[in-house]
Image (cartoon, rainbow, N blue to C red; front, side, top):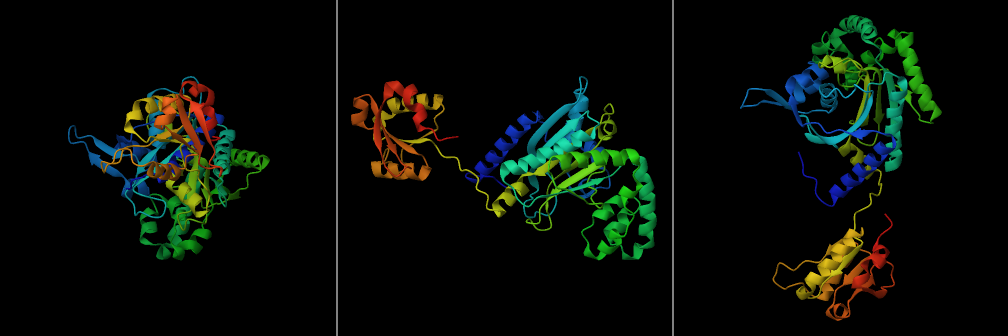
Length: 421
């Protein structure tokens, strides 16, 4: 687990602001659920034989009442629990999004920590393939907003339970014939969760996996029709995709469409966003049956990919830096600064030196003003204040131009200090 400090935290704020603006355009509304949930919620929702439940959850017993609790390893189960608990679908479907920390006890790797962060979007109460496509388009639009390059979209359909059941039987029969070549993990999952074997990263098993029965070959007309609508909408919007018949995702709750956005620039952990349809999860955790689809992206991985691609993330800088030669000027200077801030101007105020040298020399203050990135310095000198003025000095345009402004007319000149934001 790690701290996120300035100036790096500014990259997080920039990404979050981009996401909020985009979610607003797509009419998705923010939901915030607890970090701690009852352990059975994740066991029921994710599946008992998934890696997350078996190996990765931070679970503990509440010593005050003996309740089994877990730090959330993902957010979808909690969102679905909240939707069911508060009867949010009584008046129709809901489009929701979230941001926040998740927790998994796994080996830390590039772009992934044991406390990591996800941004996700969920559309609940909508059965149509157009919502699957809308969510994919939403994620694709985010990559454009961020300037991400070399991200490809992979699709698959997991069909419906009866279709998966027929495929499961064929898959188990096939894998049993090759049991001598399966690794320990695959043999353990052979009868409990054979679909996950198809997602193995073991190079020695790739030829077996490639020749295994494909789920898509077991899908009926309705499931195939749903999948075809998704692909047609993506085609109409110029979104490139490829079908990956081995794409199954890591949770048991998916059905029909599943998808991942993948990059080759982050090593073996190349998925930056993944999701799909989960029409049976709400009922599975005790709510009234309702369809749903969603995705989640890894914030650390997206930021790592932006860094890898050399994408420039704007650093926050103040519009102006207040240079205050004499502490006696602080009351008047700070009242002026507050009025500027109330007009939307970002002002960084110089503070007294901890060495006991008061406000410090003008030279040292201008040095800090320049280092702040501010476009202007506001000099609250004794001579200027005596005339009811403040000196505005340009720091970034190369001219070093200086102009005096009236302390009483802040509202008239405040906007001249602002960057184009």
